Structures are given as structure tokens and as C-alpha cells.
Image (tube, rainbow, N blue to C red; front, side, top):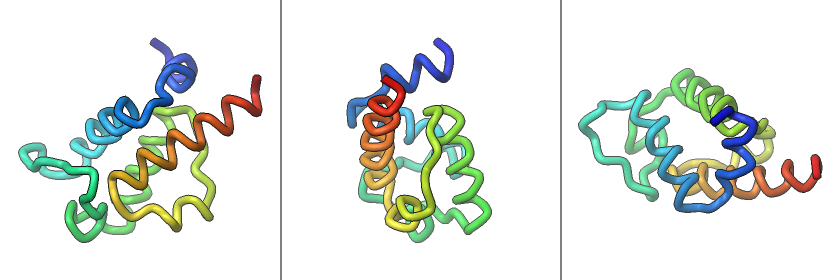
Length: 96
């Protein structure tokens, strides 16, 4: 499945959370359990560079661009998944 078609299909919260968690595992200790309420920097230990790398990976995987105003409101894994569902819906309806 291509990234573009993946983004069109991947709009439910549960699916988005699962993929977001998989991406996060590349950026943190692989043995660490990742929970929706984990704070990306405080709990998972990503520094500002790590967060930017994570954002780039997420944008590539979901074929979205996360605007700075949305990015500034993201703190937890749950926040990422919710923002992606919203962005996918907005960008999907903009291209439909």
C-alpha cells in the first residue's frame, strides 16, 4: 500500500494510534511500552531534535503536513493520533 492510499484508509483513531506507536518505537527504547497518555518528551525521553525527526516520519507515513499551530498543541501520543485523524479528514475533504 502506498503512503497516499495509506493516508486515505488510515483515518480511525485506533488504527492511527497503532501506526503512531509503531513509528515511535523507532525513536525510543524498543522494549518500552508506549501508552496513549505518555508525554512524548517527559515520558518517552525525546529531545527537540527527536521530536522533529518523529514529526517528519509521521508526516511521511501519513502523507500529511502538521502545521506549527497544531504541533504546538501536541504533547502526548494520544494528541498525535487525534491530530492525525483530524488532519487526515481535513486534507482528505480538501482534495475530494
